[in-house]
Length: 361
Ligand SMILES: Nc1ncnc2c1ncn2[C@@H]1O[C@H](COP(=O)(O)OP(=O)(O)OP(=O)(O)O)[C@@H](O)[C@H]1O
Image (cartoon, rainbow, N blue to C red; front, side, top):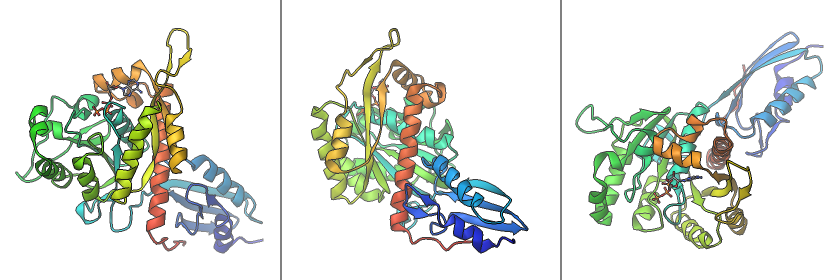
């Protein structure tokens, strides 16, 4: 019994991406199908290298191919091609080479927004994505310290634009490289906004799958106008678990709603403290506030990060915990969050982009 390309495509059309709720053929993920006698070679191109559903999709695709009558063997090449939100990037014409701008925000300071932004960006880069990290937190730009770049300065190749610094596989730019912290603090809103937009626009980001923007904390004018100006693909909200933090989450969510930026989900940071001596878990800032907030708003819960000395030390040493302790439970928690974020971005993109035409040869 001979197998045709159509048989293979029919089998693939029965495999549903559980995050995107669309089959692999419709989603344009099945490429280069080559049938030779009773064997087939094909490529499946996921929508992100950090796909949270890869294991399930792989198992389902293999099962579907095994069920094709007459097919004796198959060889699937797995790849990934990140797609951008309609109109180019989350940044649209603003940054044509950047597929998705993601905002990391928090209703108030000190909840670990920068820690989440750094580890999220680094985890995505570890998966193989092209990632930039822009520290727009002029109140306390901590990305230089957290990435070990504090003693470096970006250079301009042409006197007009700046080359980002490179560390841990990321392209990095921070307002902290360019102005003294106390200087930025006395600037008025429009001047700050101008400076931050210049950082978005006048940096040689090149081609990026994700540009992570660490926003100033809170829901003040600068965070609002910046969010509005960059046309982001989505925002990640960071909170701590106590009930009092919920009010801040509400305000942050309302801010993103106002500027029509989808909230991709909530990360609960400093969730539990696990004693390194006795392994007992203590919910220092309570537990479950992030979950509760996610349920209240019907937005995804992206994961929880434990309160751990390693995370703080990693931040201070300039080597993110996902690099320095990559097999630790804390690193795994950040990696899970990164995969969840990547999955949400893909789902968001799928909503805004017409499905690509299937390619088969
Ligand atoms: N899960 C964690 N476990 C231990 N320490 C943490 C954790 N998350 C953040 N920290 C530490 O808490 C401090 C504040 O974190 P971070 O700077 O990321 O917060 P932020 O919300 O960005 O603050 P700001 O609003 O001031 O910019 C840092 O010293 C950081 O290392």
